[in-house]
Amino acid sequence: MSRVIRIAAAQMGPIPKREARAETLCRLIALLEKAAERGAKLAVFPELALTTFFPRWLMDGDILDSYFEYSMPNPNVQPLFDRAKELGIGFYIGYAEMSPEGQRFNSSILVSPEGEIIGKYRKVHLPGSVEPREGALYQQLEKRYFEYGDMGFPVTHAGPSLDEAIIGMLICNDRRWPEAWRCLAMQGMELLCVGYNSAAYDPNGGDTESAELRTFHAQLVVQANAYMNACWAVAVAKAGSEDGSGLIGGSCIVDPNGCIVVETKTLEDEVIVADCDLDLCQQGKSKMFNFEAHRRPQWYSLITEQTGVVIRK
Amino acid sequence: MSRVIRIAAAQMGPIPKREARAETLCRLIALLEKAAERGAKLAVFPELALTTFFPRWLMDGDILDSYFEYSMPNPNVQPLFDRAKELGIGFYIGYAEMSPEGQRFNSSILVSPEGEIIGKYRKVHLPGSVEPREGALYQQLEKRYFEYGDMGFPVTHAGPSLDEAIIGMLICNDRRWPEAWRCLAMQGMELLCVGYNSAAYDPNGGDTESAELRTFHAQLVVQANAYMNACWAVAVAKAGSEDGSGLIGGSCIVDPNGCIVVETKTLEDEVIVADCDLDLCQQGKSKMFNFEAHRRPQWYSLITEQTGVVIRK
Image 1: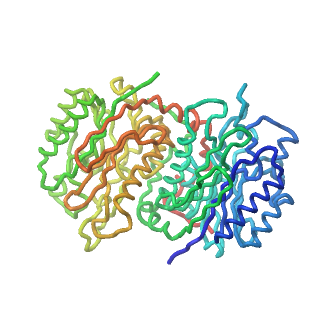
Image 2: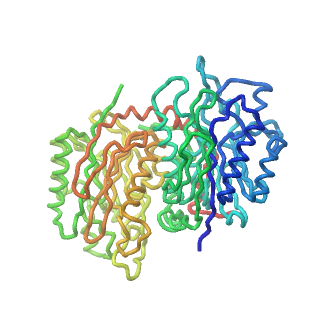
Image 3: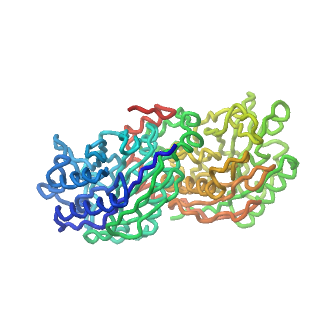
């Protein structure tokens, strides 16, 4: 038996602050069409795929609010939903969410090839700070602009058009936290989708980590966590120099062995596809990573009982 | 400031069943001397470094018991302890432990350069099965011969001769379980030592995973978990064809960026060394992996509340 879904990673180049929302939507639709042309049933877009990565600036009021979606879909994004349904392709997309209660989240949704929203996730691992770093040209203010995700790590049971895949979503920094992957895998996850905006260098001039090292880190965590959780993973960048701040590319589709099947070659809008056989997860899930047979949760309590490091000498 | 320890990974080639214990001890001492010659203050030996990997055979009674150490040190291994103390080099070594209460564990100890046992660990993640696989030429009977480790994941605070490193130990299969690394990192671990005996192929003739893929897996999990826990890691194989059953090599020393600093080139007795600056852990521990600032344990409960996968549709 095999359950093969052709999946596209739809990497985006930078979305400059000045780019009109309609123009960004055209780019998303063009990527979607390329993915569909190549036979994909699911396209994965980046984190905050409708706007520039605005947490790099200090702002408030109407300007800040203008980066958020007040409902999903909404008239600004409806053409993307319509085109996807027409093409019979599902998608993952990240966006800034304003909830009906006025809460802000860094969110993603999963839309089926039939055009229904079948999954929703709110980013749990927010990097950055609440207070701006004084004198810095660029900020990382996710902890200021977003509340911590309040949904935990839900999986989506997709329908027959996606081979009844069990799909998990993460957003950017989440992928570096093995706890997030594990919580999804405890629910049988077969496919992990994650979009990201990850700095290629310190835009304020630090030089501790090169773009090459940062791309290596980004791929390493996806490869190892895919292997250790016996699932497919699709990791998709917003890449390139966005308003003077560099973002890594390195979007990739990774198999349950942790091997990169295909990866992007540019820092621009680029579609890559792979045939992902969900049944390949069974080798890991039934043997090496048969959780029921091999996990020993009675010894894992420090993971949930402590937030930070506690040195006990 | 920097806290640099020169560490050796002391890989071993196979230890055939017929090899006399005294001969194996000579090999261990020779490796230790090479490590000390090259200036190492700590040498890391493999899992079950005193014997062949005996869980590959079904046995019982005196024959089984002959593979176990009834105390540590004991007269059979005393020369290794004596020589290490003389050379002023500490070591990690894996062995089969028979406790005073008659319990069997797959264990490791950490010995200081002053010759004191300063750390002890009993393997938590036992692979294999309790019952032998019928008709199989080779077994994997760790679950039959050993009890699950009952000490959790303790760290050792080493003394000044090891730069007061906070050291964690794992054994073989443990390294594929991110929970194990995280429990150690929650206690401030700066250096992880792990010895292993990992099959290079299915000795019973299956062909789902090549030796190359298995070596990739072994290094991938060490690299990613070292990065995600901002620690150094030293992973050391018993390698080569042992009594007709192939074991991978790929011993390596990995920095807190997840990069392999040095790795073995053979499947034989081989020493590699690296200067490990423990203060390099601070970049990760204070920023990207600042647990106190970024972890959200209220959402991690599936990790401790479930052993196996639970599908909730």
